[in-house]
Length: 108
Image 1 (cartoon, rainbow, N blue to C red):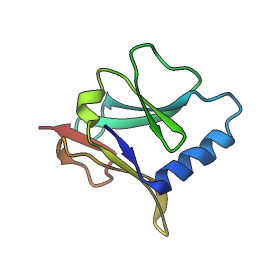
Image 2: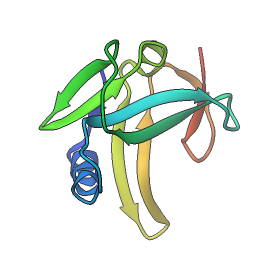
Image 3: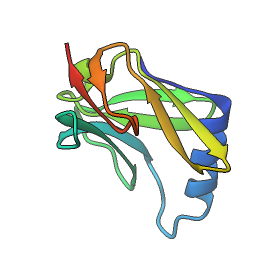
């Protein structure tokens, strides 16, 4: 299961409200790349795939594809707004190592 902090839920809601297209949910996935081998990806989706796992987080639907699911099971996503910048921060119990920016990782 994935969790979003209240701050992350509010940030996603803001992005959904400003989207020009209808939004079916927030896709959270893992792709190859980044300085640690795998990187997180997030985007608003207009439709869900039949094999997506769906989580409802206080009205925000999170979509996860079957290949990404085991790599991000248990991940906590926060939205941080600070003087150094703002963005989503991932805490992944499956990451053996992650880069300094927190946007990429390698699995154990």
